[in-house]
Amino acid sequence: MSDHQRKAAELSSQIHPKNLLRNHMPFQWTFLLTIGLLFFSGCSGNRVSEVSVEASGVEIRGETPKFNEIDWPSWRGRTNDGMVPSGQKLITNWSVTENVLWSIDIPGRGNSSPIIVGDTVYLATADDDKEEQWVLAYDAKTGEAKWSTMVRQGGFPTTRQMHPKSTHANGTVACDGEHLFVAFLGNNVITAYALDLEGKKVWEKEVGDFSSKFGYAPSVQIYRSAVLVSADHLGGGYLAALDRKTGQIAWRIPRPAKSSYSTARVVTVAGEDQLVISGCGTVSSYDPMTGLQKWTTDGTANATCGTVVADKTHIFASGGFPESQTVCITADGSRDVVWSRRVKVYEPSLLLKDGLLFGITDKGIAYCWSASDGKELWKTRLQGTFSASPIHCNENIYVPNNDGVTFVFKAVGESYQQIAANPLGDEAYASLAVSDSKIFARVVDTSEGRQEKLYCLGTPTEETSP
Image (cartoon, rainbow, N blue to C red):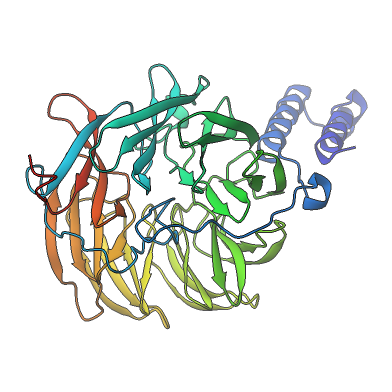
């Protein structure tokens, strides 16, 4: 008998007439209490079963795909931390008329950030009216549309189950050089998809149920021969690894029944690969090969959005709601909290560079801490509110606010040193992507009704000049 069935049997026995008389409780109140408890236990209990690698027979093998220096193949880039490989010469100033190599209109609505592999830009979008979710491909040099593929239709959450800023295409696509991977929410289920680079669907796999409070946010990640899917939610969350070739689930492990929105990320820390995620009141580490938990530490908040960052020995995380905490944790299994600050960097992810930890809060306050001890080196208020995550290139940090203004400032600890504030569009919730010394920005233009646009920004040459 399952725990759920056992609870139902116990409650059923309690509403037997003899027990009602014995307990002196009115029948109608007992009945309502019983229904409420059954409903609560059903909603908060974990509805996803655990799958072990032994039971699945799917082995995670090989090495994580390697990419060219200029590729940006997944959420927050090649290393999933917003760091642009050195050697790319990024511009620091632009506008709708300055340093724009090309721009195109994007159909639908989404907060998915662009990725770039080879000469192609990929991103996800959704048509709210038709309840369709798509993957799009564009030529990175010209902006010309290459193909568009609708991967699923129908079953969108209601508006009451979505945050006003959320979309039905929040997660960023990932690429392994041969296939594209993405996960969408529909019909109360998270489904993962694989497409080839011509847009043909290769496989799809239901990963698990999902009870939406504000929508589905995480991005898929690639680790060796697996695609990793994160899904924390009220009905009982989970992490899962799927085989990249077949979509078969290699392992799946339960998570708490709480709504959180962070992407789990594999980091090499404390001498080993660890799959780390914040949220549900903890920062937790798992073995990416098996899903077995390595350690967990109380911290951050019940709900977090940002993806953790790490150095060789520590994990840095922040959140969220309702708690406010930025924390540094030793990643060797000792679970030691090195330092903690009562600051929440909720939607944007943190950025770590040369012993400095940078965070931009939703309300637009930029912080710089010493990564070793959490000492606040400086803070300043920027203009507007923020959802996108920062990137770093050539000792500069780039981060757009929700009104489409990208702030560029020095990644230094002495003081906040702004280089530029570049307006582009009227809304910007997607994070920037970089490839071949060009910046790719997904923004919204509301001058003639709501229209999403993709911009390619860089230094014009004779080939790119109109």
